[in-house]
Length: 475
Image (cartoon, rainbow, N blue to C red; front, side, top):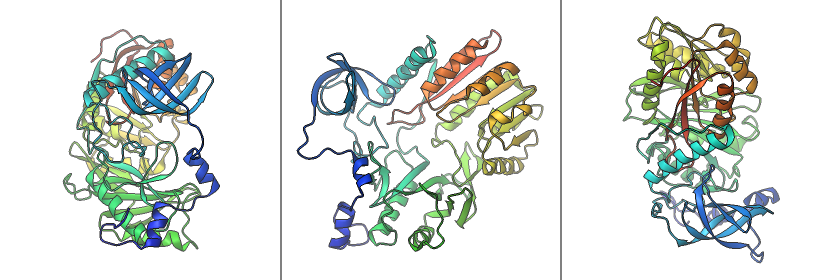
């Protein structure tokens, strides 16, 4: 690595950064074969893009999933792991390139686990994501239907949140291990996040932050405390595999002090092992601007990372919710009230109910409601499956669950209540397909499934499904 910005690392420091001592467990996680271990190599054609980002092909009765390949290519690949009828690998030579192949602009692409599709032209990424969603709906849900629309925005510098690993360097995890890749500039992240990673790597180089071996990480979000989108700053919370309890641990106390002293860090907190978030610098909540409106966001709470495309999702949900205004709309897994508050403004005749398990997020939603002057929206700090008593009569349900999707018990209970409309925002096509199959079996009709590309250069995809109880066309 040599000389770092603003400082010169000693020979000992360089050796520690480039070749840190690893525990046996960390060596196993790297999953690197011994130098003399034979590696199986295959030559094969790949025919489709699979959910998870790899290209799928078949060879000698085995199904192969090959990273960094593109449907339609012939590649030489090294096998990473496999079984009798299945294997995973990486393309090491492109024998016949697809027309969609481009040169990845990021120097970290490949080793870094943040992106999987930088080698694919962006228009083709959108096409492949449409195909993946349709394939998952068909294979898992038994639903033969087409994605009705694809929405996208800027494909670079869109991420407003990140988890920065702290180890021999500050950066992101490698794709197939927990090893940290030192990152100086992330092309898909907001420049403020890249600036913070540079600052953190400087602290590590100077020994102000020790090598935590990736057991601690900094979860950061770009916030706007001045109310201006062109004046961003960083909200950060330090988390750990075993939580963070700095008392009696000088290396953690020193790291917190060093991070808090960075001018780019507006607020800093840490998450304790037994739960609870403690502030070190600044307030716990920070304002995030979405289409000119400021939502209060607690450090460590979930919020959509692509603020450029988020207004399009809000506008689409607003259009779908229009026929249900004047009734009751429930927002399950509401977080800080993103959808509920957006729909409540300007519609005093509509009752909005937001349900979320995180009490800090609920408190932030209530603070935002007060700031906006919204009085027709109430929030419940309980798990969705335990708060159904709040939904005795509901006209439209909006859900935005984690990747695991909705619990079947909750789905059955919602079907029993029979809301006329159902909006499902999903970050996982497989669980979306599973849950839509249950809803259709319960009497709902899928009116539309749309794709929102919140995560360009990666295989991740956000979907929006709209269902109705009775026959009717999509809005």
